[in-house]
Image (cartoon, rainbow, N blue to C red; front, side):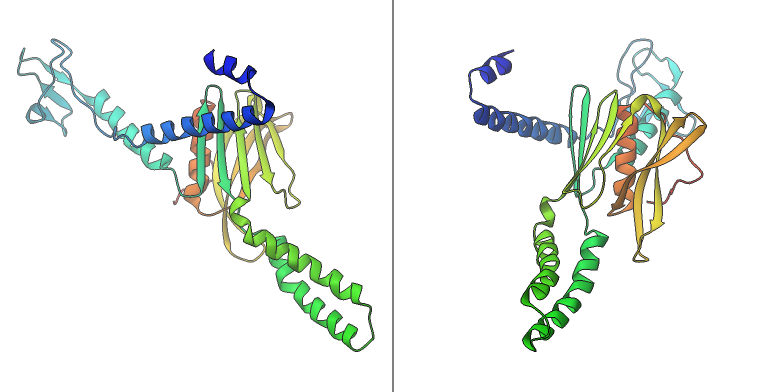
Length: 267
């Protein structure tokens, strides 16, 4: 309430700056909280609630004995819970190049864009045409604008690569929609999926147009004619990046992770 009242008393620019600062602070708090080591559990006696010492815990047989009341009891649920937690932490380890922000009913994942095929083609092909056009101009066989026209895409692609760190792809997930936004777009359309139609997500490997190994994430939708597999993201740095995105969205939407035949399993 205090945050809302303060926003009403500020001008538009100040509001935007304040919201950005407020959002960054929450991000920092979440990151600091996520670094706390929670990869452990304590065994409590179900009879007297006392902590059971490790010497009285039999991991292999999954039983424990309480020194306080001498009760003997099974601990398979606690061990299974711990193993599940450890497995989840390994999968959810946040890779470099991915930012996570979650507040209330909205999850945001921001990923660093990689060099696009268009940028590679422009920097590979257009310099050749630019040299030919400039040579033709120097010999008086072509006007200068042809040479400039050939150089313009090269200049734009070079500037794009210089500012590559600012190129982001953002996934915005609410309980109703999953949105993918590319900034800059680089001739890629933004995507919007209705969460009620999302049945599953999975990570996969594929060969890009350069013949290199690439990674991505697909969504499985409940279509009118059966399951539809749609591309969510591509061109990710590693399979671990794809797995992280997959698992974060599935957890947020409470989708049970199931193995798909098309899924890549090696991280």
